[in-house]
Image 1 (cartoon, rainbow, N blue to C red):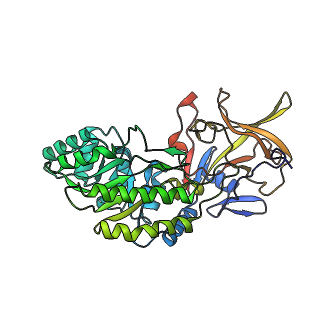
Image 2 (image 1 turned 180 degrees about the horizontal axis):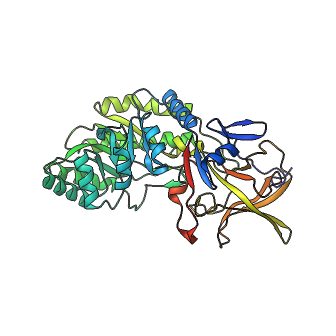
Image 3 (image 1 turned 30 degrees about the horizontal axis):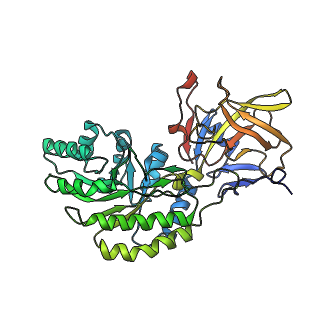
Length: 413
């Protein structure tokens, strides 16, 4: 039988409760939650599912590995506050995220700041707060040292390394060629030699090679190469390596045919590396930095059908949301060939589909499409459409100001 007749399906959704065909988020029926929120569209994040995912990571990652949350995945303050109480550290990429991190109970000693193009004001704020700065270039190192001199504080720094390898099959490659991120591995020894003469407290390396990976063997290979590179670079360092951030890259299944990571296999691969790291970098705390994997599957985007129309044989469900709220689901955030996120009618979960529809938003552009030829139970005006896998890189990664529509709410339940 052809693949056309049996197209690949989305991986089964995990965690969310369904009672009598109605989706529940955080123990609340979605229509009731919509009334509590007061308007659509909105994002809803399930507190219990976030906690469960972190517990699963704790159970499968080797003892001694520190788990950090990358705030950029979902910077909603309530989410950051919740996650901060469950992980070992926070990683940020702007002064705005720094403000969020410093408002949590997380100690600045366990907060790090990465990203190219840090402003002088951001460097000063990080130094004053005691946040670890992941240096992205030799010039940024000099600027951090000058800021520290002006403040009378020795900045805590690590070197972000652009390795000469990449995380194979990753959704977004962050290394392996000319990149704006980090310092090319071959240039790091000279930078470390210069660092020895500056008033900087060297703490280690940040080596992040890619994101959104669903292959355990690719993650294991990248982690091994990362450890080997860090051990080689440590010979040039002005002090012992105290932190080795090996990034993350753990992916979640978004599209038909994709399967979830086997977390036990990922943990076993990392466990095999730990004795080597402990022997060659005895003072190094190994950090796994995750964002999407912690929150991505715990969030949904909810939008209401405001019109049902037919155009030349195709049915359109027109909603009050769209790409201005959820750019990634529209296919305009990194997709080369557009694919659908998993969609559902919130009150007809488990009901067999009886029509093929296009789910579109309220913007005057053909790019505003949440679902293309989606098989769904019949949708009517007033129904709630749910976009799953929406807990990461959703609202904050979308052009909210486009065409002047109201911003959606976000709730943690």
